[in-house]
Length: 233
Ligand SMILES: [Zn+2]
Image (cartoon, rainbow, N blue to C red):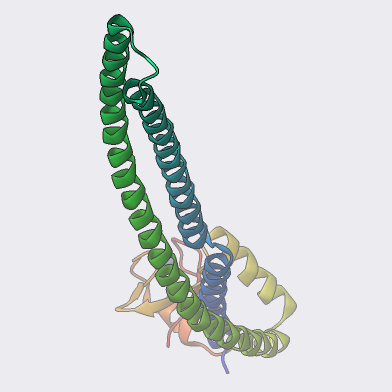
């Protein structure tokens, strides 16, 4: 195995490790992020609260209308009971009953409105409940798939680490340091491939001598422009 080929394999392994690590980070974040479930829960709580308030309003109007009817009954009992004889008092009573009945009609309108609002609030609660179930079921299925992928990627990562270990063990320490330094300063790519007589990282045309050196099993050639290690596969 030529020196450059060893570095080439190392870089290929590092690129794969990076991809697997990125995907793992993405999956872990998704599994931890239960924003959708939280949103579905808060929507359910909100609609339940609205329904509860609408019901309270309805009960309140019902109670008010009931007490209004009672008052009307009492006034009518006085009117027709024969205890009140004075025509002026009887007229006052009749006027008051008429006023109470108008108030009752207004209350019954409010009661009807509150009943409609209550039914609407109940429908919204039921729809939030159904939506929440769908969301939780979907998240559950999605997370099951992600958990399986996580386990499989963690195995891949162990294998890649072992491969990397095997490659670097066979590599001179100073070369490894050089590789790591170039990797840091060259956006993760320490090595470039010679392709069409050029460096495939920066596009510089390479002289025959440099290409010759890149092909040599015992030598290391560098791109004169970007400074990367060259590999002629
Ligand atoms: Zn280059």
